[in-house]
Amino acid sequence: MPLRKIYSVLEPSFCVTAQGSKEVLLGDQRYQYDPFHYLLTTLELPRVSQVLEASKERPYLSLRLELDPQLVSSVMIESGYTGATRHPVDMRAMTVSPLDANLLDAVVRLIRLLDSPTEVPILMPMITREIVYRLLRGAQGARLRHLAALGGYTPHIAKAVERLREDFDKPLSIEQLAHELGMSVSGFHQHFKSVTAMSPLQFQKQVRLQEARRLMLNEDLDATTAAYRVGYRDAAYFNREYKSFFGIPPMRDVQRLRETVSALPDR
Image (cartoon, rainbow, N blue to C red; front, side, top):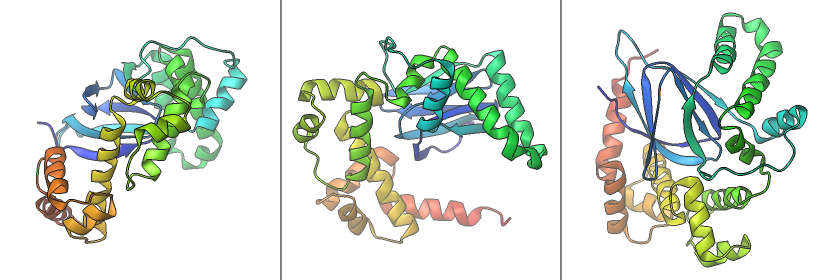
């Protein structure tokens, strides 16, 4: 039975599951992965995720490895992947791909370090570099190379994503942002959506709503105050947007989350 949806921001990451399966929603796209597939994301993106298979007898088990752009660049240079590359038709910053034997072997060795804490400082950096290397050599290598910002429109979109995340509470001028990036408005829209699966306005909305949820939950703000803090000027409109995205009005949602947390057993 699917578990409750989780709304969060996913950093550039390599994600695998050892048991169960998971689905990630990005814009209007769905990405499902299991022990035979991995999820790769190359930009910091707001997402909705949901564990699809899990039980008390067979709990969901997974690993997420954050991908540092500097590390990716370092492995690329060491491996000789510094030349110009042909960009894939699909520039989207998230994908699911089969987990091959060599990549799986490196992941298993990384997980086994949990049983040998003294070896972690020495072996973890080496195995992490190997995983990055095998990703670069694999089917999604060209996509991963965008993380190192080598040409194409990806660096422009990465800057736009960073700008939208930093200034999410400010009015968004698509024309000004496109001009700052040296792109036409239509070109900016097209390439932003090809990478993030969302329009810039949809992206900003998701960031705003997730931040409002955090403010209400962690700082005990009421819905109207949280709405103003994240850039909304119409509380009723905020309530409608919030319910449309999370499926429940703001304060009821926060109350439900608090009840869920309070019901968890003490550790």
